[in-house]
Amino acid sequence: MLAVNLRSFRQKVRHHKKELKGFLSKLLKDQPAGMDKLAASLEMDVWKEVDCLTCANCCKTMSPTFTKTDIKRISKHFGQSPEAFTKQWLRKDRIGDMLNKTEPCQFLNLTDNKCSIYEIRPVDCSGFPHLHKKRMVDYIHVHKQNIEYCPATYRLVEKMQVAMKGGKG
Image (tube, rainbow, N blue to C red; front, side, top):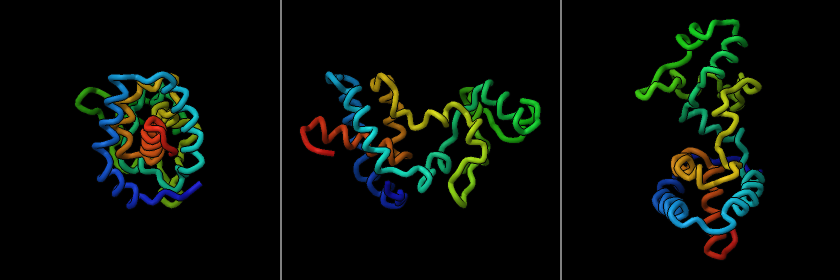
């Protein structure tokens, strides 16, 4: 597994974002047979290449959506009421979702990129970057966003593009 170089990653995104998003849009319109199986097999390779703890870009630049269940579970951990937890840590966005007040995430330890509430983290965090979903087509819109933030997502889409052109990733 390689350490993630965020500067290099951001440069790659700048140069290839439009192409990769176009590739994902094409997959959405014309879903090739075996796409889910291919994504699952490539995902295993991606995780051999990407070490999340050397990156944590998701925690540094994005916020999970906190569900009512997340808020209840995490506030209990802190010995707070859900209302007190929400007031201290969260904000409501324009569509009513509950998000972190700050970036990077207030629960991210910036010295080692570990989550201080990892065992009880929001469901949105535990599923991120959503590569392992059974039907990739249902998450293409998510991958389009995440290629800009997550080196693992970027690498999966890049590998899929190469594989579907008949090359090696």
